[in-house]
Image (tube, rainbow, N blue to C red):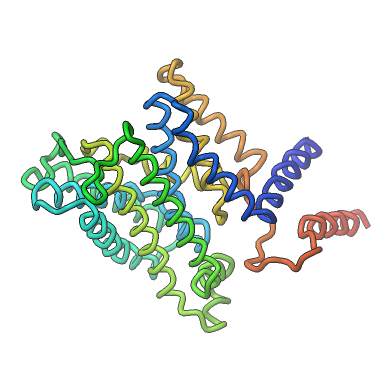
Amino acid sequence: MKNTNQVIDNFFADISNSIRKNRIIFSVALLTVVAFIPALGLPSYILRIGVMIMIYAILALGLNIPTGYTGQVSIGHAGFFSIGAYTSAILVTQAGWSMLPAMVAAAAIAGIFGFLLGLPTLRVSGTYLSICTLGFAEIVRMAVLNWDTLTNGPMGIKNIPYPTVFGVEMTLRNYGAYYMILVMLVMTSVFVHLIINSKIGRAFRSIKEDELASMMMGVFTMKYKILSFVLSAIISGMAGAFYAHFMRYIDPNSFTFDTSILILSIVILGGMGTMRGMFLGAIILVSFPEALRFLEQYRFVFYGLVLVIMMRYRPQGLLGWRSKSPYEFPKGVDPDKIARGFNNSSSQNKMI
């Protein structure tokens, strides 16, 4: 069993390291393939799944900031998703705003709630923080469900206008919605990459590894813990705003606890603390249930089975890198060989 685990671990580690070392080539190739998918003449149903994959990839990129990089596990991101969707839908349908300003406002309001949710991180952590985020999501859902005068309660908001850019409707028929969410995904990926590879990102990682040591080194941990939630909420609110215009109808059942678990599962499956894993996790967990739809309710049994097997054989995620160092090694240095050599030497010392 140990040899099997090692083979599986080495297989995914080699793939992860290959992607990491050739990330520019891989990113360009992946972007090219995704951009040319509409040219294949696929049914609208397939394109709709592609749009949903990209929406959840954006949500996973946002959640990965506090959970994967800062170590603040949240199971209530459906709340930010809901706030973004309802804010944009209300501003457009009731206040007469256009879509782009409404999306900006949705992201900003979600960021404000991210700041408020980040405040408990100054006092609690671990399981208690997860419970706080869960409570936040439920508070948002109940507010949306019972605030009939603003959100139309359980009836939801319908006839939300399609996404528009310079007066042109972005739909699946003209592939506008597909390319719009693709541009949003690329912009979000670039933004997260710049954040994570900056001073802010290094502070996030130091807090995850050892918060006390970070404080001793002069890192203002309170500020960065709150900032991680704010950035995550802004990204999630933006994704929610697009989701509302793309679906054209939203109700409280669109943002349940299951939604939060799906987003968190994407982060865990792909690999916490990696960007490449968010894309793979979204592809698997959004498309997999659709591929098994013919099994009706039993498809979720297979969905859970995949997660259990993954956690057994690859707990760091499919594309998670085993090294915990926040800095890249110099060229010519293979961290996996160093780790394997260290493990072998430790085993020999135990035998001695």
